[in-house]
Length: 206
Image 1 (cartoon, one colour):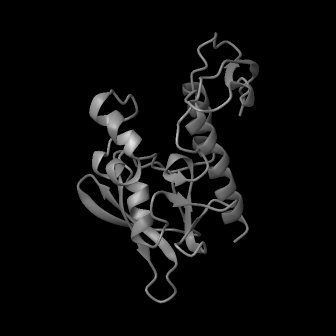
Image 2: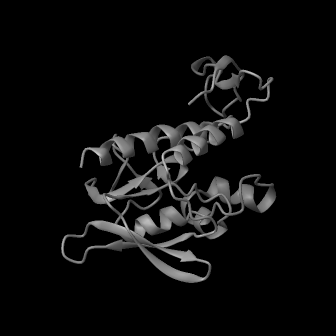
Image 3: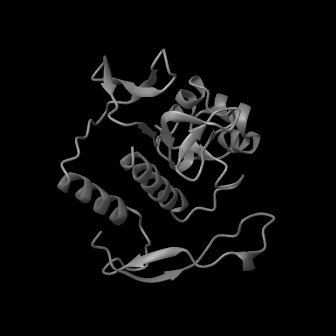
């Protein structure tokens, strides 16, 4: 992607876990000092997507998934485009990448009491738009309760551990890969890139 990594350093202590189990993970890029800021990585991804003529709809949140009524396949999404519900047909599948339940107290109360307690008594620094929308949409079509469980191709699994055709998830709206505690230092960014790539590779074979 045109980024040159020069070194790595640091990791945060994770409660109840032996520090010796964790290696340095904050990546420093050429010309970036010691900040380890993920912005440069996101910028590189955006430039690559733009170069490949990707179309972006900003301020157009997805509000529902569309399923084929005959074969149960996820075939598209409904988005709120400037106040107008707009249907978008998926060519091969839908990849959910909407972060987690960071600012959704009701969902946190049901799925993660530790996080709920943090929301009640501490400050959450993640984006205010991280409200678990992808998790809710995934559950509406049969995704596993408590987070969207995925397989090694990033396909969302139903309550019987079977792939939901046409539906994928990546990053923090995919459950089971991170554990009960977020260690910080860009873990979410690495997850979304790796799992998003796995989903894309699977979709490319269809």
